[in-house]
Picture 1 (spheres, rainbow, N blue to C red):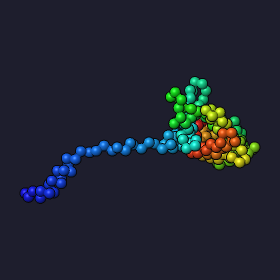
Picture 2 (cartoon, one colour):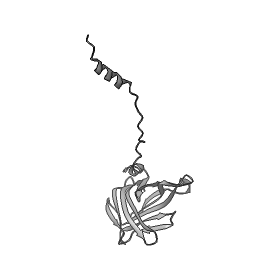
Picture 3 (cartoon, one colour):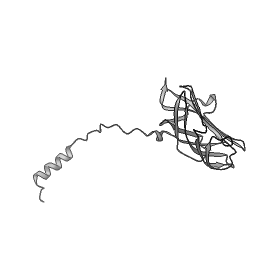
Picture 4 (cartoon, rainbow, N blue to C red):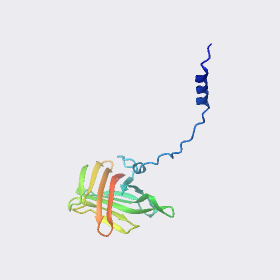
Length: 182
């Protein structure tokens, strides 16, 4: 048996003896979208969105009332959520607010542009800044109902809006999703 030439043997030994350096780069942080609940269609009672690019999820104490509720009376679909931004905390509690969406005269899945008097409205309240925003003719919301199941009483969908008030400025809500029983 013939031995490999010394330079190749030396290179192989050096390669095997190298210590593996730890990567100084920290692992990537999840994107803000990764912090939102998945977009499901099975009545999971989920609600989340990005508010000005930051994840906004349900937060609060369920004993003080529902964090997210969906109701439908044969005419009006109403969604109400209490939540907050994951990155903004005071004494360990996320700072929150509320988002509400109501759609009048709804009887099927589809795209709804709010507001119109006959269709409904959407709103956002930030309790920290004490700012309240509502849709209007200049600042509509788009709500896409992806599932409206009257037999199993499930509503799922997506939403987005950009609202503005003179006193508070602009709030941009994107990548909204919800899935609940009503």
